[in-house]
Amino acid sequence: MTVTAFLNARLACPVAGVRSGSLLVRDGAILASGTIDVPADAKYELDAKGEKVLISGDKEAHIDGLIA
Image 1 (cartoon, rainbow, N blue to C red):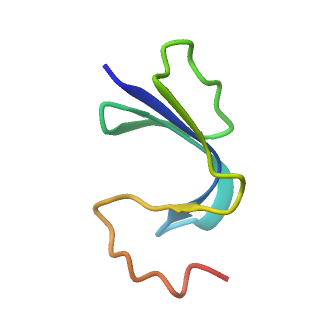
Image 2 (image 1 turned 90 degrees about the horizontal axis):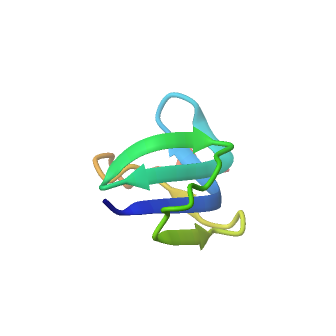
């Protein structure tokens, strides 16, 4: 299993809009979002430094209205 933690990102959600937080993914499935604890078995830990927006791969990437 591959666990990836995306830290300090801007998370784009079609319902909640864009909010700051982190995302924990295991084998392509989202396990947690918001404030997360990075598990010891995390293979990758990526810090977005508050500058990168994460959006689900199954969503339309044209999101001008979400980003202010």
